[in-house]
Image 1 (spheres, rainbow, N blue to C red):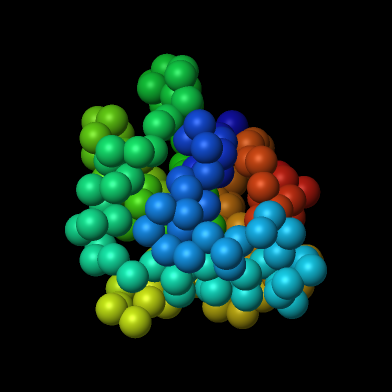
Image 2: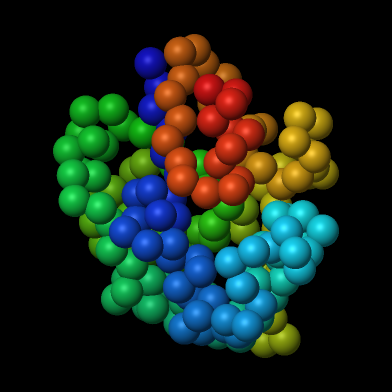
Length: 163
């Protein structure tokens, strides 16, 4: 059995990407209901990430200071060695894993090109999912069976169905 976990709001106590947008970007872009404002989850994510106007180093320092992982995660890692599959960004995920002594975990996430005029999300998978029609995590799942997926967000729905 292979365990796959979402990062934001699953491994972390609160959604670190949303918190970063609130603290380092423009929170008015995120109103909690992307379906009403954007055509897809992928469009909403790109718009949110584009509001970030800090360096990658500043974002990493913010993440190390503010992102809290859930109690028991170290024990879960020791037992199952999960793969982290996230719609988030390595600039916010990897510094926290390093802080926690878990930098060896496999992380499959989107990425970002950092620029002074805003960050540009670079999606891990090209195009949209053939099943849900959006930028979900299904194609980032390991190709093993059995597979257990744990996530709490919109982008986790299709991956959960695949598992």
